[in-house]
Length: 149
Image (cartoon, rainbow, N blue to C red; front, side, top):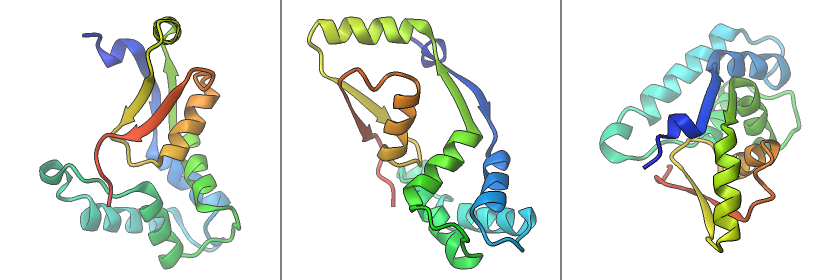
């Protein structure tokens, strides 16, 4: 088995940067980063406290909907675009070259490729992320490994 760390490198994982982007670009102008983080903490305590025992994670869109209800959005962007915006500024990932080689070889051999993820992000966001990494030219289907609620 190949270690995921060798295939896919997280170059940065900074949720604070994502929440700051939400504050500056999406949420109503008079909110503070403290307001945003308070609601993020409330979300974590309410929706994610039992994920270790249930394997269920609340979706990131659910968190965005809570922020919209509690603070309000000034943006008219669709919620899935807002989710991708948050994802793209808070996560920087890069597949190792061996990933491309392996996936191309598997496709040539006729294997059907699936992307499985236990992320809180939607399959649409993950597909878009794969497209930015030039992996969308491969045949794949994004599926979530664990259910969200």
